[in-house]
Length: 238
Image (cartoon, rainbow, N blue to C red; front, side):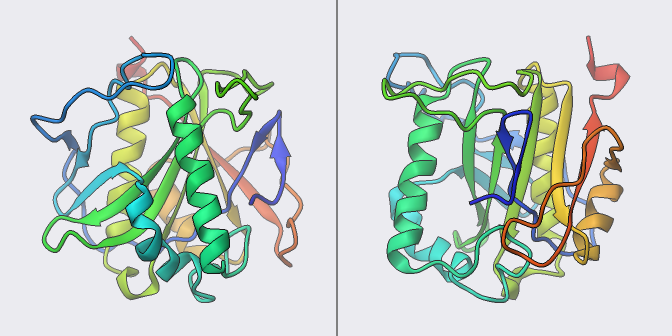
């Protein structure tokens, strides 16, 4: 799935688009029932994140067809760590993503999000926030060598919905969620070098190329992977 690993945490390259409009701060939808994982722990803060035009929620099995429309699209996967997925491979990936989310328990987590248009309810992309990808046979996430207070961010949009500001709106909501809803102090993101729209998007959110994070191998793609990082603002550090 990912081109490389750094300190035991797997990276997925970002496909995005240059934003054209600002987004409102995300909020969680009211009336969302509590969810529990297999250990009986309530998955606090995982309710939908609502922005000006989008709702971000955890992916569901019923999202398979919608997700395949972009995960199986050559134009959408150019700058992802995988090529176009078959329907079967997409379903397997979705099942694995849901298992990782189900196993999440503080401080270790791995959540995949559906990016949904509020107006139509259409799933137009997906995103991922995580600080480990190690799932034990017992169905719990194992600590990785990556620090628990660091997290990674990745996302993809269907080509029909790029260049409309949705990528930045979704990414900004997830950055806000990571910094305000958890103990995360640093967010990292990987982007293939030719993907200048993603680089501009990350920079617009305050991400900077991190010299401490060695650029990663291409993982089957003919592009070097550049690592960016964003530290929690001082006024949010408590």
